[in-house]
Length: 392
Ligand code: APR
Picture: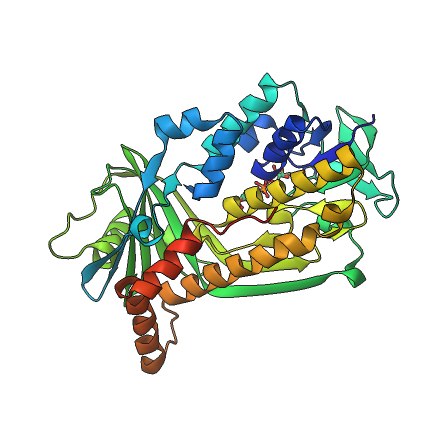
């Protein structure tokens, strides 16, 4: 088989890239290890930046967001026994964020690929990527009991943190930056209407908690826990007690309880590899970086990368200009390090580590007040939360 761009992985990064390339008249083939239903139903992040929504609308995929998305203008931070509402819409000159779950984004992108006859090969694990230091990389994959090869001009490694693309790069030419956090999140889905339509963060002495909305009848809630916590230790009663303590404040509606339908623990990590390219192999999304979920940046960062990559591939395949492709990693990293700074900073500000000193605790409270109660703090948060610009 032969194509211009081989895309490994049909998560949000790979699917969006295929659609962006098609719009520029560039042919691509997507090769995905998992079954289509598995990819479509993975439960993940749920907040879209303004720029991600603009991208999806631009791809003709605005209908789902209009129908089922919830436009957000503020976050209700609760600490010190009261609410500190941060109106990021006002502080950013009118920018918004949307609650719209990742599996909906993936379903919309998949449908668009089907409509446009973009080739997606599911249940086809890539086993080897060769010759990407030359001009004709070869992707080897397994499909329906046989080995196949895909020859291309460039390979987009959109295969997530555990994918094969990053591991195929020469380690001596790559630097890795990583940080593991001393806490994780116990995430639950509850059949209970949210008491408010705004995302609520509880920065409590006992630990962090968060309330988000999945649908009008279903809430997504998180509780800080140990990174390796056993979810079985959390009975439903224990979960609701902790959520009430960490999120409820006087004069605001209390969180509502309901049947818990899902419980899982996520550890938190920041990770970046640099450069994000070697020869004609380019990494995008989770394949290149991981952020803790606090700032809701994982999906948005993946969509930012593929916009930079699509423009660079267009200049290269369409006009024979390799300059943007050569600077792909530098362009992404300039933005990405700011995303890391924001995600890690926010993560450390809202969680309480078990051995936090009284002094460190006071400093963290000052940071929270600065973010919510000063003009400069609100502006900084709002600018980052609604999404930094993407360089051309
Ligand atoms: N061959 C083919 N496909 C592979 C291989 C392989 N060897 N290894 C992994 N994949 C596929 C995975 O099955 C997965 O569907 O690559 C895809 C990667 O998708 P994601 O992990 O969703 O990564 P990405 O598209 O970068 O999305 C960014 O945003 O909210 C965050 O982590 C969250 O998934 C999210 C991410």
